[in-house]
Image (tube, rainbow, N blue to C red; front, side, top):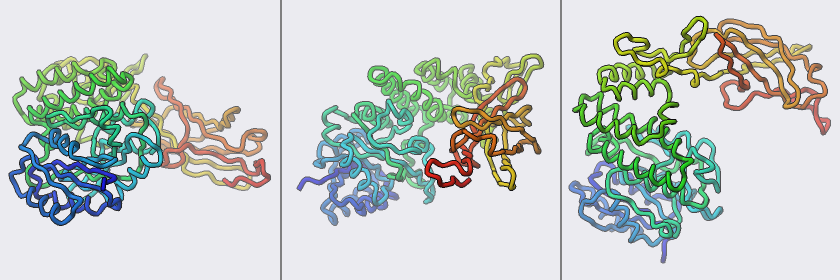
Length: 480
């Protein structure tokens, strides 16, 4: 009988981990699957473990090829696959029990070409959130597309997904040789799909290896690895330039956020700097000028130092970043005209003469405003909250508060308390004739800088809303 789902698993020198991986596949709640194990010339005991599973469970099939890398191994597995749907797993990772059932069910419900889900990072036996995927799956959505949901540019792995096999074959998708073979294919699939289903469930546990042979991604600061990563970046950019140019800025920004770190790590490690600096020039030449110019100020400083070959200074800035993982400060400079700069090493250093615009952080300033309490006194509501500027370690000069129902704005008298505290009184009579729900708008001004926004409800991301007592189209009061 034809299985519903084929799972392709390349296998190469993963003896410490493969048993846990294959057990997780055998335990899937969707049992109508076949697991195609492709031994890519393993030199350890991985093949023996794979043989044992194939002997015990008829859903497991073992095939061989000489060592050619994960891309060709996956391609061979796809050629052997018989399922209606197609998935991939790496043999050192773990798939949660209900993952494939959830993903296949979504595709059966919607008719989309692929379904994808959130990822956990397995570090020393503890499951953490994958920093690569965390922003992509905060708001799940069915029947969407990467050009509408551009955060999916961050979803560039193939193993947290299930694909329709006829979609895969119709577009002739194939993994290239090399060690970053999944990124180009993942991006191509997202763009070529008619629609995509995003689920919030964690559907894959991506392992950071603790013992045995290190994975490809853990050898990412090696020079050959960096050259292959650049080749993958070029491949993706060429495809996007032709098929979805609106995604280029988002992809470039992700390269500057994630991929460039491996280049920094190699430079910090004291590897031969000449080839690395030449490679860095090639990387930066690939990326759009707009993305380079609008990168966060601390990243712009790192890139400036790399361009100038200032490796010792780069190490100092990288140490500074790690020492300030909770956030770096932005400070005002200037008397008549105030500008805002990152408080980083080498600012206005006479020896290095780095231009001030490298440190310019004005666009990174954000308003932080939240309501902590709103209590009825018998005569009025008393509101308490905090207003600050993110990364600015000083009291806001002026604060204004307004209630808005979308048509009217009602100003409130603001009282300050402490460094960030604000308080105001709300007389419901002033809101008569307005809507049932009002939001609190904030205007903050410091040294000529003005920021506006809405107050959040405590630490939540949602806007705080004030519901007017006694107002209801149905005659029922709306409680505060």
